[in-house]
Length: 132
Image (cartoon, rainbow, N blue to C red):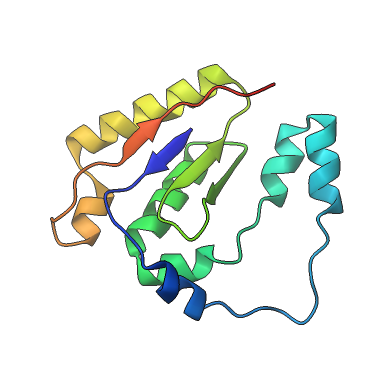
């Protein structure tokens, strides 16, 4: 499920804030999880070095990330330099459930709106079919 908050980030600002570690992380466990179809392991190994910077620059991204985790997705991560996030779901039904819950919450109140001073609306949500 793809969640696009109604806020933006400057790609240049996000990249300026990134610190590249001396030692690279191996992607082997991630590749093995993907090859084996292990959604839980894949979700635990998702990583985007840009996300912590984006969350500092744009608190609604952090709020949406926390909410996706609370809803129980197998994994959640920001896409690229933000501000969109995705939830890795175990099946299509779970993706629909997450989208319904976020939509219902957006109709009652929207954390992103509160965090940016009432200038934003609810996130756009998209349920994407697996390509498998």
